[in-house]
Image 1 (cartoon, rainbow, N blue to C red):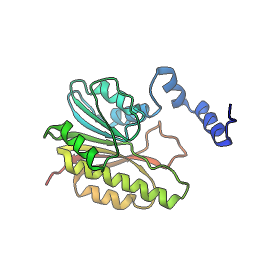
Image 2 (tube, rainbow, N blue to C red):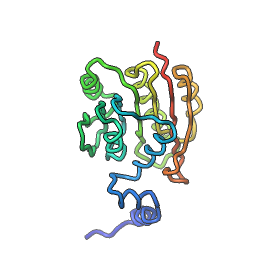
Image 3 (cartoon, one colour):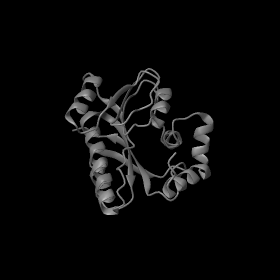
Image 4 (cartoon, one colour):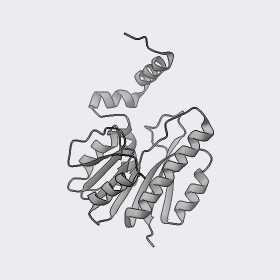
Length: 207
């Protein structure tokens, strides 16, 4: 058996100390991310039965299972290059958003209908080079905004994971041109030492 590295030991130690990681394990959730979406939903009343939702960055499925429970009778399209845990009628698309085949699969799943909500929990693979990681994170935020502009119905909403740093203010300014309201929030379930925040964007103004 191979020895654990110091970084894996630190990760395990952090998981043991993390109350949301423990709570997720105790309650049988796929990941602690379940509580982030739950807190955003409770604060902003994002979800209701029958909605049509596109979830980007869905793996491993922490948000997907929560969404399946809340969208009873609706349409959920979950997209990620990695495997996604889904137990309902979710349309699972294993591919990178922005690739032609992935976009075509989303288009086919929608069948000409629009979306009520686009959710993006996409995050870059961390290289350790902060400027490069931030640029990649903003690129993913741009992809989420593009998905919203492409498929949201008028009045629809967008929720996007951001990382505080260069490019966020310009991205928010761009979003304000297309939506009625923009909120930035850090759920209690987000780790305090993380730069992660979420933009909750309401009221799409379709051209």
